[in-house]
Image 1 (cartoon, rainbow, N blue to C red):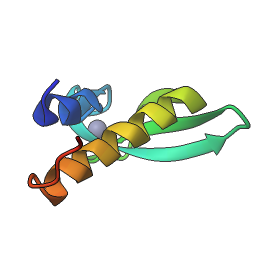
Image 2 (tube, rainbow, N blue to C red):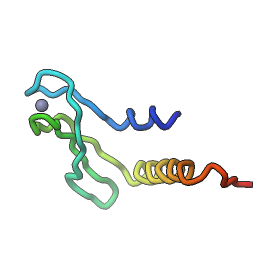
Image 3 (cartoon, rainbow, N blue to C red):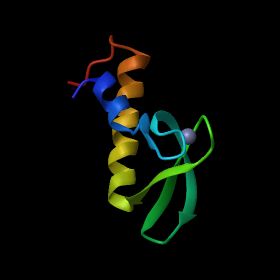
Image 4 (cartoon, rainbow, N blue to C red):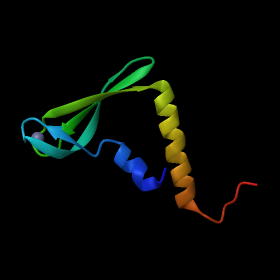
Length: 82
Ligand SMILES: [Zn+2]
């Protein structure tokens, strides 16, 4: 999976009922539970809640690892893991 595809996977736009079209969204951390986090997606145009997502601890770890791998690639291609 390329870097670009990974970004798009993270819900960059969702259908908004109030706008009656797909709109760019931003995510907001709604609730933190011992084993998961609840995020909601808000329409950036009207502020309507357009979706929710549960992130389990395992997902968070996977995202953190993906993020670190991305940063490592960005930081320096001259670094090689032997
Ligand atoms: Zn909207």
